[in-house]
Image (cartoon, rainbow, N blue to C red):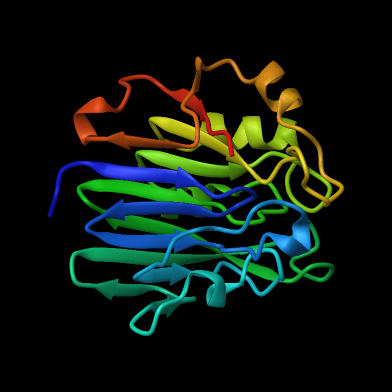
Length: 213
């Protein structure tokens, strides 16, 4: 397995992680939410929940793709699904989600999906120590900037990647990233649309990495 891992943002909550195999998390179709669709074909597709802006596997699917909705091991790739909710009412309003913790290419990733509530100590312990944390910050349907900042402080991670916020063209009524960046105390790095990194490139102290579409 190669040492270099490519991370690419396809807008909203959709990320591609590639290291030989290509993992795509929460693909959307683009058209339904007003932004370009993901232009990639995935070996492994992770679906955190069944909302239309997160479950469009067909957009990135190829004949041999594996679609994952629960914990699964695929060769050297370990995927752990952790139960959480889309709201503060134990899923009564918007249902359940899966937080995915992924071990791949010598690194650990955690995608918080459309998390709608603060994380309790038990869930934080399940997440453990990760290298990169993908966290929603746009509020309305998920945690807001203040809640995201608090979780970012609590989770042991080297890199915090904001997602699920308002960008140009996005038709969903969520907030922009500005509020989160104003209150987060960690250094902010802008990394364009994608980044290629090795484990040695990770910061020793927490940083926020902002991707652009």
